[in-house]
Image (tube, rainbow, N blue to C red; front, side):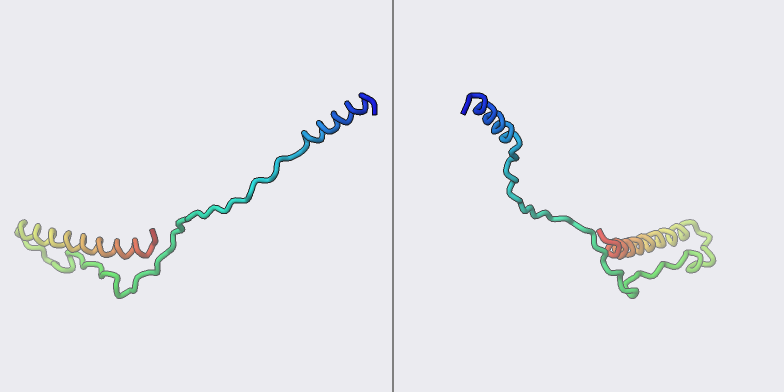
Length: 97
């Protein structure tokens, strides 16, 4: 075998070695937790609070005394706030996170 053949064979082996691919990496199993919002069932209609009556329905004739008017309106504000708190809790529970 001549030196030219050895050089050609060496060049061919070098070229083929450059085409070799590294071994494939080992597959990895990764567990991830994914939070998915889930709708809660709507509340029972019996649990839904009744809408408070309007001031004009409860007091068709407002008293002339401003202090009494203020007392009536303040009581209505407190009643409406209580309704809003109860209704908000039901709606947030029904609509999901």
